[in-house]
Length: 259
Image (cartoon, rainbow, N blue to C red; front, side):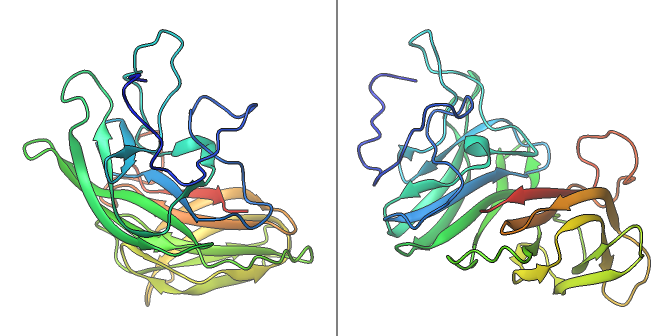
């Protein structure tokens, strides 16, 4: 990183040894911490790799051993800080994703205002289609309203819709052996989040369906939910593309652990 870049404005941003290559992070939440807790996703279709900022303070970065700031950032489809939360000061702020590459270095491609509350958790998403002319992409923030008390008799699961051309969709979990299905909340529109729903632990096949339709819009098989854990399943990608195959921007259901 640039030696002149200061992280002093962060409240209690914790860097833990033994985590992966992201320089600024805290581990998955196991106890209440002072300040707000924020997780960052780059789900902007065709968006460049970015570092995330709160105001003018960089809060995610790739560590460098050369003394020069890395030009590698959070790529499309990835979660910053190894899928961990970052502790930030409560209050009003504006999040941005800024290009990490040498070309257009530190150019903000999204501006996402938010008000953070103490001891609350949030997820920030870059979303939409990246405009190569304006070099802008959409973004949004949702609260992560899961309980502080762990319940080891079940897992908690919610659905977020970050696919810009998706209609409101509803998430269903199917137990592949018995064939029983669990509906996770209602139909969720783009840039919105559903509530956390308790589900029996186990392995499920995931399906989203558009309201009023029985056809699968996006599927993903063999996703495990463990006892006492909290998960967010997020729809991302371009709904005009086939769901099968390996296209980077295809519709996809991301599974991220909150706790």
